[in-house]
Amino acid sequence: MATDTGHMAGRAARFLSVPETMAGARALARRHPERCLIRVVGRSRGGRPLVLLTICGDGPPVLVVGGPHPNEPVGWTSTLYLARHLLRGAEPPRTGPAWHILLCLDPDGAALTAGWPAGPPSMARHFEHFHRPAFDDQPEWLSARGDEGRPLPETLALTRLIDETRPALQCSLHGVDLGGAFLELTRAVPGLSDRFARSARQARMPLDVGTYDAYGWASPSPGTYLMPAAGEPGAFAALPDSPGDSTWAYAGRHGGVTAVVEAPMWAADAVADGRPHPRAAAALRAAGQDLLAGTGDLDDLLAQARPHLVERPGQVLASVEFNLKVAAGLADGWVATPGMTVSQVVNLEIASERIPLRIAALLRRLLAGAAGGSRTEPLRARLEREVTERRERFAERFRARWIPVEDQVSHQIRTILAAADCVTGGDRPEPGTA
Image 1 (cartoon, rainbow, N blue to C red):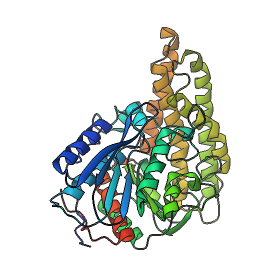
Image 2 (image 1 turned 180 degrees about the vertical axis):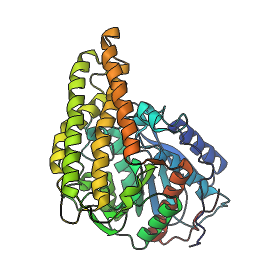
Image 3 (image 1 turned 45 degrees about the vertical axis):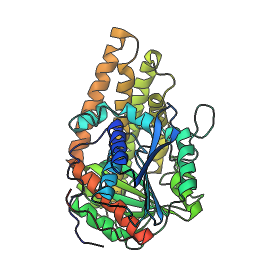
């Protein structure tokens, strides 16, 4: 493996929209018809296409899943830049893995966040166009169900694709609004953790050594976490996120390993601090109280807004209700344990601020299209203040530092290529500057 670890996404100056990603993939398929196949492998709940770009190879198959969460546009942006890199300067036939790149798993959710990647990046813009579905609307969970109690069509399309391609490696591309880089694996992949950490350093991202998403999981190397086995709970009992009930684990039916690749939009450098926290118990009590106070106020605002809401039911309202419902259970589960690190405590403090901020942003969005005219103006004004004040405190408290899109995308692609090399034994050189 070559040691050139420069930027490989030098033109990724901004996030792409899903239509831009799909148009770019179709252009690549036209340019490389001897190596590429593009097809629709399913439809979303809203009828949008789930588009797969396959880049032919004679090696073990690799499946890359972009856009599983619509508030994380780095995922679908990275899929196109990965494809461009894989096809750069290539002449058929080409040895190496067969790449199956699902451009966006949740195009309906992405349509609700379309305003975020459409302009200059700022935290204000991010929360102005924020949407993150409740668990029942997230297609990576096998337990997710639609209105009629059936698995989501996006979930079924992905599991069919896994059964068809039988990937040796599946990479799920995620983003973190505020925090650090981390990697979740369904089983250990020798050699990958060091290369992941090196890539994060190159992208000037802190390595999250106590992430909220993998709280309490085994961590064989800093920033790398092993998912619990089937039947074991996820990070917190209040959340229905058992990794064994996910499409990440589903790839294991065919002997494959899944890597969930997380890249932060804004860095909080304290998540890299693995030293023992000097006052963990007091800090967690305060975080739990902050979460309960914030969500309690927002529960009252929802009750006042509900008679005026147009979206009834809908994904945005379902997300508000879900987050309000689980808040108390989360706060109860934030209990200090011996040896808790600064990173672990800071991650819970981030969550105590982020959850009410997200709820407030979603409520503001709901109320923007509500009926009631001037009668709802006081509620709108209060929610505007809530979002602004919470967002500013969020950024200031944790010293949020923007990570350029180029670095986010480059880090994800370096990690994908390193994982493919470690899992499949490929010999593709690491990328240089685009």
